[in-house]
Length: 135
Image 1 (cartoon, helix red, strand yellow):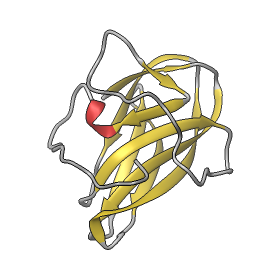
Image 2 (cartoon, one colour):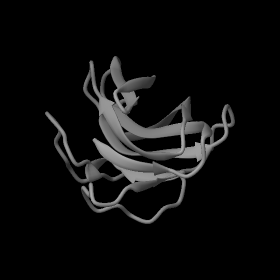
Image 3 (cartoon, rainbow, N blue to C red):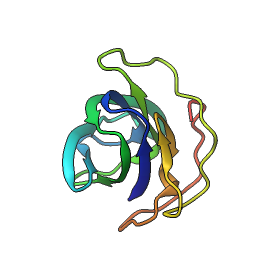
Image 4 (cartoon, rainbow, N blue to C red):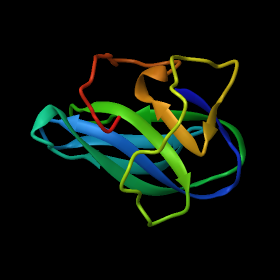
């Protein structure tokens, strides 16, 4: 879980940086217990071979609880981000201040980038170092 503060209601491009040695990984993105999108983490031929996947989502302004659920597969997640707009998937990762850990006392800004390890609540999640030059 992550607490987020959406600045402006509208369409956003959700980007997620993933790596996996197998196919079939799914990320279900939920805001306030409502499913917004499911992204598929592809086989990138290595746990440190990274790619960015995308989906269009609609967000409303204000503070929300964002959950990432992993219904199937094994993969690494480095970061995810939200950018205003739709369909024009960026070719480079967004720039943002590094997020160092859970904070339910303040919210992550959207649009913006969130490091995967900055979650407040998680089950079955492990953290590890990454060699991702894009993250």
